[in-house]
Amino acid sequence: MFDRIEYTVERIDGDYAYLRNESEPDSELKCVARALLPAEISEGSRLAYEMLQYSMI
Image (cartoon, rainbow, N blue to C red):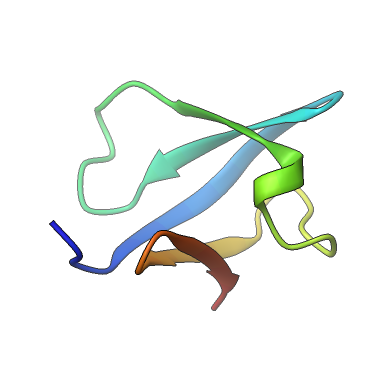
């Protein structure tokens, strides 16, 4: 439940970012509000989701 999940920011569209789960590359992109993500993200950034928070890798 609280395992670390690594994502790549595939696309930024306004107030939302679309993330690809690196361990399941064929899965659907996850849409996340940018307010929940680090401010410095850009397309291609790598993120870790752990303990209900996103952080840059």
